[in-house]
Length: 450
Ligand code: SAM
Image 1 (cartoon, rainbow, N blue to C red):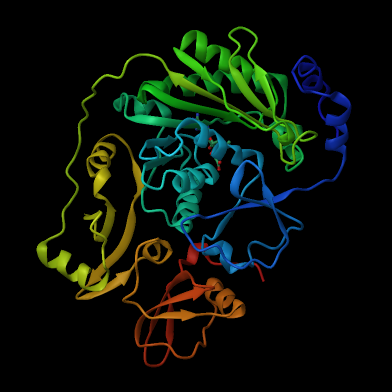
Image 2 (tube, helix red, strand yellow):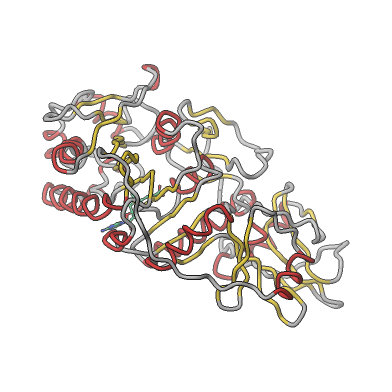
């Protein structure tokens, strides 16, 4: 695989760049497979060999690439397939917010959801808004985050400029910006065809535009994490310089261990710290990440909000008879569907609902048909208790049939709603009728691969 010469030239003076080893690693057919376990679900028994990823406690390198599509644990949200360098976000969070995780977090460029899942695990008592501007990609984000099961996530589908209505609302922001993608050449060689110096310039301008749009929504003294999967200094250190000179941001240094092979760079004008992942130096793909703090003293902001639709007393009673909603959670209705969200962030949810287009907030519990609750798939995948439903543990083959929505022949089911699970992890619902079992796995997510 030949890396464009113009890219190699542009990297000559970048710290840590070694043309010979960089070209060699791109010419090799090394393929790295890695996953990150979901801390909010039980860690399953895996039948693969794994090694730890040093900067992320639940990250693992796998010795070979299994078929994730044919692994029920993947569909149960037990883990997410993620490139190792990106998991360095965990180290950034550890160093910046530490154990103070009750944060209002925005993941601005969130689809398909790798970093949102990591943020939801880290800030499990925080509020995570995962936003994606492109509608079709927002749907993938909903799917991945539903499988992840976190109950404190709000998924929105907005342009960065729409966040202007929320000045100072977030205290941590991740901008994993769209970029020219040179860091992923090894995973996606077609990206080489699309790479050009003009596109690097366009990406750099777009990154500035996105950041300028979104920064007013960051609280004073709040943390900005900026990342790209591009090697180009125009998209990395130049943006860091611009943030410091034009946007009132201060660089934050992150500690790394020399054995990790991550290169700490300093931007040419303002010496802002950045962290480069060269695939010839780390076991991972190309990545850049830099951290900043917004200067200025915190001030009080006021927001407009809307009232979410409350449940009637009877509806609340009916739902509580079926599902033990934790004290910490409140209920609301969206159309016919009954949802639950952390009380602690109730006001924030009402503010977000006023200003943004919400695709999904909290956990959908289901809809009532008469007195029968049709439980939502979201509930099955969530971390909420589901002890009032019979659970049927499936073999791997049965689980795959269920996920394919093939015909089911499972014994020992109870009439009514049953939760199917694999290795203690819920997969979804079935309704057992006297003469058949109705499969409620979402048809749009079913496995098509044989
Ligand atoms: N953070 C994601 C993850 O870890 O799974 C990957 C994000 S990807 C590098 C960049 C995302 O930015 C894409 O989903 C893309 O659709 C989105 N995007 C594209 N143009 C954008 C824009 N003008 N403003 C904000 N986001 C944009």
